[in-house]
Image (cartoon, rainbow, N blue to C red; front, side, top):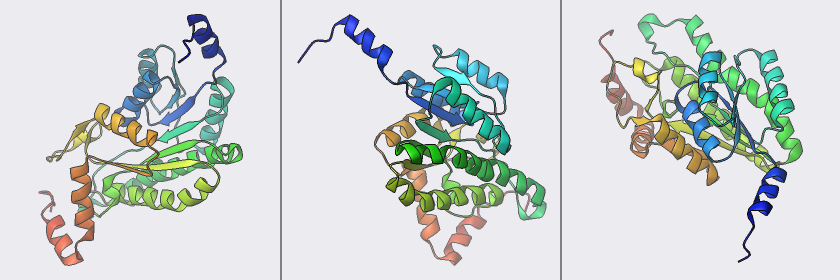
Length: 266
């Protein structure tokens, strides 16, 4: 095997194309952990979220590989402008992880269509606006990779997750519909369905969260799944199996189980 000199390695690094990833929802949780993981792997990371301060703190933890681009994904004009700015400064986006989203619990007794709209606009419409902006360039280049972060809550309706689960189910169906066409254009698409991950959002929960994992564990699992080219990346496996089995049950049995999940507000 030929030994490459230090000089030649340095020259090669100068001419090697920069790999650019864009991560939304990167100020905390899975998005943040994944940004740090990909930066260690050599990617140049554009990170977006509404909190400019949190993004600045994240960027400060890297050796210049993470660059902050504050963004509210519900603002379509801002999405278009941010992507253009990223491409102008860093180059074409090779890989995008669309993880921006929020979560709150809701029940029939306090159901509020305004809050439902807020969840839909951020979790679903915000993601769609990012896809609308990045897919055409990837299709034109016949290359690129996209990961959309949904949830195992999208598998089955759970008490307290009417709004959240609806948006995550919609993301799953949307990606399943887009996947075959994108593949014909050379673009890879993955859907990420986590169970309970220790993040600022899940820390608001006042109930036991089975199979809880850290954001860093989630990031490692996602990175491995994406490297393997898997369409669905779901974890932890015990939570995934439980949710899929629940969905497969006849309605009478399924509702008998989900009724037990109701909190004291009922």
